[in-house]
Image (cartoon, rainbow, N blue to C red; front, side):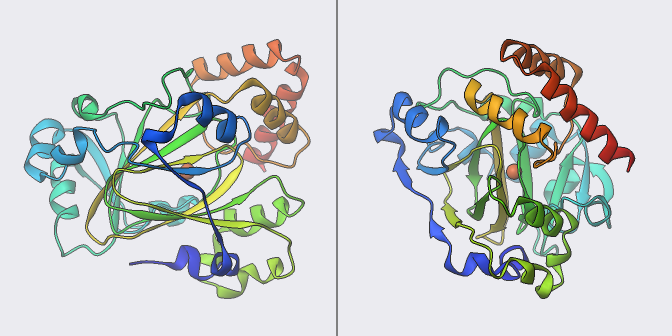
Length: 308
Ligand SMILES: [Fe+2]
């Protein structure tokens, strides 16, 4: 299994375990007060245990029959944050042909880029007992699927929105470190350039950094709660076909306010795209919070970086 995403990051050697809670002993009020309101990650054991997808999607024929016609990009490598690495070796094909490859031993590492939503598979996705009240996320679509074989994701963070990373098929290990640290700029330089992916010395600058690294094992049927502004790197723990579903929702107002202020101060970059409707929703909430000017600054900074 590829482990470069952890191997060259020395902090992962002594990472502390993320707390684990059983889904049956996690009322919504506790999930919100202990984890979401405080932006503290946790593993929820059995969170997606009952989803029909967990059985149905093991069957390649089922996936092909239901959603085989959709166009996808096939990448013969892991999920990368840098464009050139991500686009290397890509091939356009139908989801059906990509599924054949992902179920075949001929391909050791691969992941798909889904160009449109696999709507026919939505009915196989369930709900969460500990998250019944949630508003639409600002930056991400309501659900995104990672369909892969033996592939992880390089280190990145979500500048906004809460996320449940659900292991529908296969297991993964996730490393985490908070972006709310004086070392954020250094983390950003190292992780966003992805040099550590080949160069073991890229993280030397972090040798004396006082950072708290965490690790979480997300077994099949579990979900990992990933708050905004937490760097996370992901490696697969199973070599065969796997599916992860990422379900985002809007953060509590104090978390949104804090994030907008941090981004306006230039400490955190706005990563990722969003739709116009979602931007409008974010503008409306910023108005409500009295942070319109700060949000404008965030957009200006993002624009400058894009042009630069
Ligand atoms: Fe992520």
